[in-house]
Length: 372
Length: 254
Image (cartoon, rainbow over all chains, first blue to last red):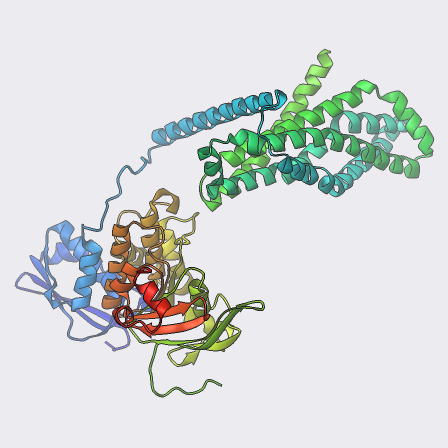
C-alpha cells in the first residue's frame, strides 16, 4: 500500500464490519469497486464502523464510495456507525441523504410500450387539433383582412416580400436554369434515340411550365423561407414574445402569420413565372448547342407544343405551394417548444412537412387537371 | 514576466485589470485578491460590469490590460493548453444554468467527468448520483432540463459545476429568477460546499440578502468611476461605507 493511491480494507470483529479507509482519494484515480452485497452475504455483519486514521487526502470520490456503502447497508438492514468518518464527510453524507431538500420525483412517465403508444397517439391528436385551430385562426384573419378590419403589420409584410422575392432570385435562377438544362439534355439523348429529338422543345416547355418550374421553386422556398419562418417564430416562442402578443390581446394570426402568408402567396407565382423563363432559356441553350436548332425554331416549336392551360396550371400550383409553405412554416414555429433545441426541431419539421405537402398537392392538382 | 508578489498567498489575484469592448472601456484598474476558501462577492449596480469581470476571470474575455493570477500563476499569460488545465479546476454556474437541453441531468453532470477523467461508466454514475444528491436532486437523474423548475435547473447546474471537485467556483447571479426561499437554500448550499470541500467561491450578485448571507469579502464596482471603489466585509461596508454610492447600495437607497 502506498500513500499515492486510495486503499480500502475490511475485517470482521464481533459481527462488526470495520472498514478501513486510507491513502489519497482523488477523483481522477477513480472510485474503488467493491461488491458490498456479496461481502455482506459472506460476512453477515450486524453493523459497520469506519477507521480513517491513515486517510491522507480526500475529495468526492471517497464520499461517493461511502455513500454507496451506506446505501447497500440500508438495503440489507445493517446499521452504520458513521462516527469514525471525518466531520466534513459526515456533513456531506448528511447533505446527500437529507430528506428536507429532497423533493422526490413523482409522476414519472411510464415506460411500457402500451403507455408509449397511447402517449404518442394523444400527442398526435393534440398536434392535429392545434393545426386545425391554427388554420381556423388564419382563415378568420384573412377574412378580417378582406373586410379591412385586420391589424396586419405592413412593415413585416414588405420585409418578407424582400426576403421571399428579390433575395431568392439568385438561387432560383441557378436551380431553374440547371433544371432546364437537364430536361433538354434528357430530350436530346433519350428522344433522339427514337428519332424524336425535335420534340425536346415539347419536353422543356411542358416540363418547366406545368411541373418543374413551380415545384423546384417551391422546394427552394421550403428550405429557404419556410424554414426561416419556423426558426424566427420559434425563437419568438422561446423568448416569450408570442406570449407577449397574446396577453396584449393581439391575435398572432394577424401580426405574425398574415404578413408571411400574404407575401409568400404573392411572390410564389412571380418566382414560378421567373423560373419558367430561366428554365426554358437553359433548355434552349442545350438544344441550340447539341442539336441543329435555331433559338427561333426552338421557341416556335415550344409555343406550338404547350397550351396556355399548362402555363396557368403551373402558376396555380406556384400559388398553392406558396400558401402551403407559409402555413407550415408559421404553424411549426408557433407549435415550437420553449427551449432552444425545440427551435431546431421546429425548423426541420417545417421543411419535412412543407416538402411533403408540396409534392402531394402537386400530384393532386395534376390529377384534378386531368378531370377538367 | 509576472512580478513576484511575496506578501500574499491568494488563490485569485486580479491586478490592474482593464476591460473594454472595442474602444469602450467598461472598467479600468480593477485589483483585488481572493484567499483560499473565501467567498468573494462582486457586487454593484446593474450595468457596472460585474458579469463582464467574471467572464474575464474565467477567460471568456481577454483583458485589455492587467492580469488574472491563480495561485501565483498568470492565467492571462498562460498558453492555451495550460489555460485549459487551469480551467478544469474551475466550476462555473451561469446565470440561467446553461444546462444542455438535449441531455438528461445525469448526462449533463457526467459530461465533464467523461471528457476529463479516466473514470469508468459505473464510477461516473456513482459520482453523478452523489453530486445530484448533494444539491437535493436525487431521483431526477433521467429528467431533461425542460422538465424541471427554474430553481431545480440552477441546482442541477451547480451539480455540473462541482462535478470535478473544482478548487474555485464562480457564480453569475445565482439568485436571479429564484424565489426568496430557493435563493436562501442555494446560498446555504454554497456555504456548505465551501465548508466541506474548502472551495474558493466568487459570486457576482446585487442581491443584498445573499451578499450578507454568504459573502466574506465584498468587492464594489462603481458605475461612475468605472473601477473598484470599496473592498471589505459586507457588514463593514454597510456600517462604514467609504463613499455615498456604496452607502446607498448597501442600504437599498435608504
